[in-house]
Length: 113
Length: 115
Image (cartoon, rainbow over all chains, first blue to last red; front, side, top):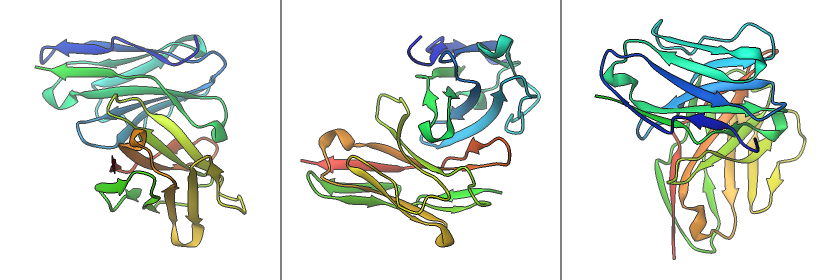
């Protein structure tokens, strides 16, 4: 597609449930990032994939968070046993070249009730 | 810990005037450069401008320009001839890393353009 596609756009879940968030990157963009943005805050780095290299998971806040990227394309961010503090907008970004900047998706707004 | 400081949580500017948004970073040398992003109320993140860490000249992109002072770890964004559509959150993000990199974002500055 022409842009980074994220689904769902909105997700409301009950505390304790697992959720999966999906990111379809721009074709040809080898780097893929996940960030989250809590209300009124900046973006917090979660995880980074680059080609076939091992992902940089240094930003994942707890072991309830995991992500995978299949075939160097689609990525899924999974949050297990969701907590209310997980409520945020989860943004996916991909990049072709550093000076082109990241291209962000429109995000998934997660609300844990 | 890496720290990005955007000292102006909120700013107002008159339409058609210029405005400077401040950014300082307390990180290791952003060898991959520095970015500014705009986030309007719709929530999308829009790439505005990129400054290469070793570029000799300050970056410019249309009405946007960077005042990059590497020794001071400062990269202020200047928006000339402000327009109503410039009202948004603005985030500064140095790209730090070795081999690979990630953007570390500040908390942003909310700019409001007054007609």
